[in-house]
Image (cartoon, rainbow, N blue to C red; front, top):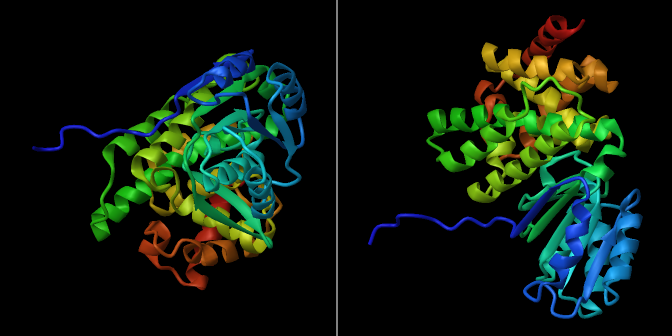
Length: 352
């Protein structure tokens, strides 16, 4: 019998609204997730303490566990805590690094994970990937997607605007990543998952031409939903491909050798603009550049405090960060001298 459909892993519950945290306690009381409220609540630095305190009061059997850092070491420490007790689920409360550490620990201990985001800095909210730093280098680890995702706009609105702009940059980079994936299909025959592309592209198209205030609930809700859709796109594809191309290779190189000069979304946003310019995709360049300019995201190396030499070095190193991935960088196969010429031309074209 032919396969007529496929089953997609997605969160059971998604709440994106002001006051969304109020729905967290009823969810945890659902016997399918926690039979007795034995929940480990992993909290990062920042606004998560208030939510954790409320949850601890409402679910007396829960245990609050501070996460000192969103690193691999922090995740392993949380794993040890989870293995020394009896828990039905893990709730991660905080920003992207905290959620990634908690998501990794929950996945490695076989526990359902509930993500409660206090900012919208990247697309890790509902993705099957945890990005964790160890010994100064970031690595990407496959994990289970969250069983539920909560984004309370009251908390997001009170957070740093820079984190929101970073989230915009991560969503915008999808278009460049998709273009790289399609380039790989044309040149190497790599299979492209059309449904994953549809999710990733729709996530970006919902956001990229908006002009309203990023502090307003309508914009924040759209951004949150776009980040969640991006995560689901990766889950559908079984790879980060629909949301990660040359833009992310450049960002990984900046993390590894240049001390992460910006937030993840800031770095991939500039990487997406540069990669689209390398592909000579004028239509995509124009729409990405307009969005980055509108909301004050980095467009040239100096915007991240980088010299032309440092950015050139990152572009040279970028393909080594994902040797299995074919993007415009691998396609052009430029040497260091040629890359420097391209970077110089790019900076000249986009510096204002």
